[in-house]
Image (cartoon, rainbow, N blue to C red; front, side, top):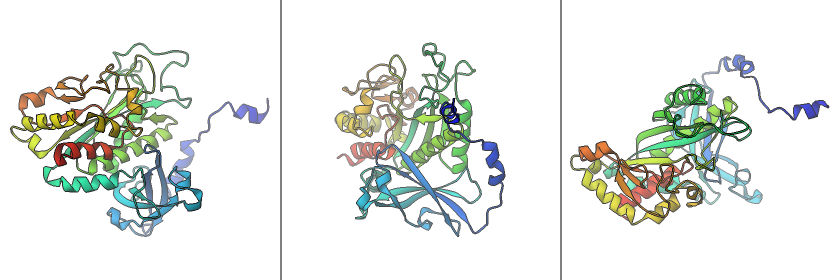
Length: 369
């Protein structure tokens, strides 16, 4: 067998130990590495590239607008390829540490209009309009870890693990797979300044969830997108992929969602339950509008998940109930007992754009369009 043929049997990888002495090299105080991060033309993919600044940026406005080749990110033609990155949020970089930064950006086209997948631009306008209602959000981001061959991480290669039941919030090597990745991601989020609230193993083995929030207004989308970036980046270091596919395994397995917990100031105060019920009534009249907004393919991805089985509602019907995980909208039992709090919209898919989800919730329940 030739060397080339033998090498084709192995996946590409590098030894992280070799990198350690380089990462220990002193970095000049007047040089800061800023990783610019943006959403590509698929509405799901995350791209990034780095530039050096000769000062330490403290806020997004301190970072210059930059450009990139949109023809390589499904966002432009080669004959007019320049796209522009407008910094909009800044976080600490847990990989490079020091003064280095992660810079979340909005994408604009050559004509200074937002790119088609720049959902933040319209979201921030609506959140500004609704600011007096103080909308709070918390999103439960489910995802699935995949081995290099695309099969769920930890699953037997020639079959399936045992039926669902022991895996949710499980403990033990025969119940959970990939905890090292989850723990590393959690710490990276905390270091970066992402408002991560918790994590747990999910119902399908190899599936996990992290929660971000509570965040007010536009911060929800900013913090979740950076949380996703960190997830993919951490998984990369472990040689594992993280997918946000809403139904990565067909059959009797749970899908993956991004349940959105939502409240306004009125909902959180005494007697707030009547405002929650009013919001649910408004949501019931805009079910199709929300389904189209809750995944990047306008409901096509969610069709595979929202079947009415596996702790989901039917994509075709709107429903609501106390402590009902098979409903479109769940009112937590504690909220019903307290008479105030929040509602949980269980319809958003795991690969949703949080800017779109939060925008349509505010649009329907506050702006009442």
